[in-house]
Image (cartoon, rainbow, N blue to C red; front, side, top):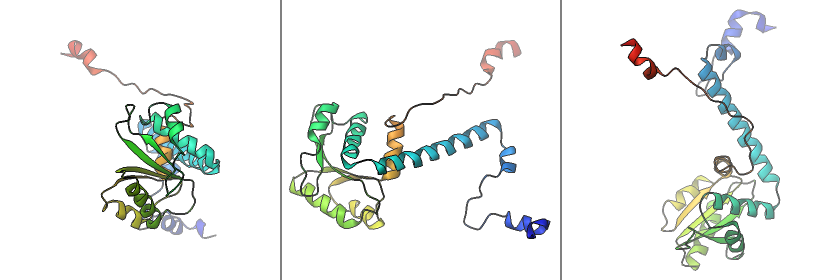
Length: 204
């Protein structure tokens, strides 16, 4: 009933303090075609990330392990899928899920922990992983999870000698999208503009 009064409509339409204003159909009408396309692209990317993470969380532990292997190989680690597949899952104790070559020559190795979790990964889990690395005299490790890391866990890795990379669910799906793992291209659009250099001789 209150919406029949212009003052009330104007009041509820004001953005709340501390929050980013959302795009409304009226605002989108004021966008340039390029801005509208960029806005649409960002929305599609966000929807894709959310959907992809949902699929990853539903997969089996074994499939998640293979997913991690294939992603790391696509990123340039481990040499071949066969080499990486043989290396992953061999540890299976002391808080380690596997080991993978840092490069194709195998000059250094990286230990891996992969957790398909819903809850936040806390500092004790990272401490356990760091301790396992020290037990193997290893300097590098990757901890991958479908959830996220606590503030204490992030602070902890910044203070230790071991080089540990933490990859949460959001970063995991972003890497999958970037390296075309679990996704496919549905459409490609080109935006062209007039090449003013082509007409320079005619104009001057």
